Amino acid sequence: MENLHLLPTISTLCIVVSAIFVAIGWAYIKQKKIEKHKKMMITAAVFASIFFIIYASRTVFIGNTSFGGPEHLKIFYTIFLIFHITLATVGAVLGVWTIWLGLKNILDKHRKIGPITSIIWFFTAITGVAVYILLYILYPGGETTSLIKAILGL
Image (cartoon, rainbow, N blue to C red; front, side):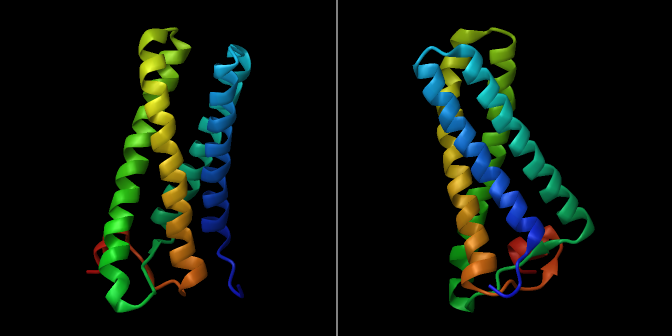
């Protein structure tokens, strides 16, 4: 890997770390260790926020990298990317809501939505790593351009 893409690498690592903290937090709540659960979930949210800050900053100031792989795979990559973006958006919204419910001690709703949020976040992390691998490891990244152009190939 001659050309390590620093910001995408850091942001992808942040999502992976966030998912790991969610998993640890989930294990703690199963053990009824509420304070440790809370700390892990807040730490997960911090790493997710760092990801978002890096991603948004890169998008605004640099742009997004389009798929540089074979043309016949582009449609599959695009569908996969849209799936990932949808998961990430839903996961982020649910994550904020789940944390808010927990911090406000609205625990009946927190307990219902928390596992769903966690599972969506795990899939977000997995698909995020897959996007990273497709853009920076398996294939050379395409041009760096605006978000719409990178996604839709316009």
